[in-house]
Amino acid sequence: MSNLLEVRDLKKYYHLGKGVGKEQANVVRAVDGINFAVKKCETLGLVGESGCGKSTAARVILRLLTATAGEILYEGQNIELLSHQQLLPYRRKMQIIFQDQAGSLNPQLTIGSALGEPLRIHRLVIGKKELKAKVEHLLELVGLCSEHMCRYPHELSGGQRQRIALARALALNPQLIVCDEPVSALDVSIQAQIINLLQDLQHKCGLTYIFIAHDLRVVNHISDRIAVMYLGKIVELAGKKALYSGAKHPYTQMLLSSIPRLAPAGQRQRTIFSGELPNPLHPPAGCHFHIRCPHAFVRCTIEEPLMQMIDSDHNVACHLLDK
Ligand code: SF4
Image (tube, rainbow, N blue to C red; front, side):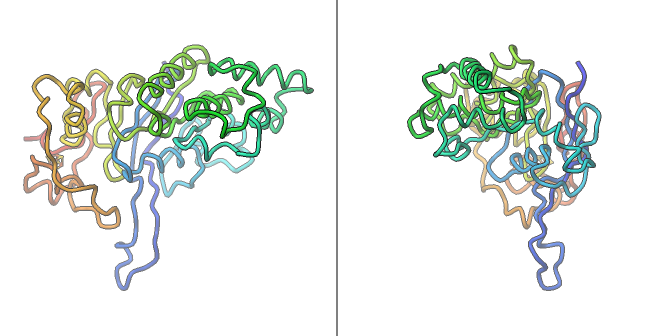
């Protein structure tokens, strides 16, 4: 199947003002040269600790933020080069849902109005009758019913609000939905329901997802491939089976070891890693992970590892591969 989206050497840097004689020291490289592709109807999991750059990457891909450098190819078209006007058709094709469903819904609008708004703005319906029918259809798609049209967001549970956020995204018939930690704030049983719903909708509507999460447990069920990010870079990118049964990057192994049920049989012992995510203003030289990595050796402290293909669907950036 062909790529719906391809990201090439994408960067997003924030310049926080000049320090005295230290211009480079005040640059945060939130996204620092990431590459990946997502095929049509595929789900790519994007995983890493808070602050590793995954949400920034998603916003740059959707052009909610301007890239510092790189290419974003949507069906082969570099949308990074498009004007605001030229971008409009792509905005409809690419939607996002957030972790904070309450914050993404207007508390003063009923659910019916919230779902009707994008349909009216984009003139996708003619007249009130068609509008009501379309809103009812959207509610049905996400497992709710017409009764919910008259309710306000505060009258719904967290899971129901996430269903509404999803229905609102679906209103514009998107091809790609970026799901930014969509279940992180929900109870585990509700998480499973939302993930099952996302999978059903993927089959029914031919959707492609980028699914962002901070741990590998959540993306396990839904992802076809997974990209692991650390301090603005992708350190491992692999098909789900290859990643869960044979993760090669020590950071991925750390994430897996925190979920013993998912770790391969020989690696179920919890790996204790020291330290927290370093300050992105002052990332460690060489491999950014070296101050937390139990396998670090001299080369890791001076030379940044490049991404290497170790299998047709498995790429890793770690000097251990050359040992
Ligand atoms: Fe650890 Fe070195 Fe690999 Fe970085 S390059 S993950 S420090 S072994």
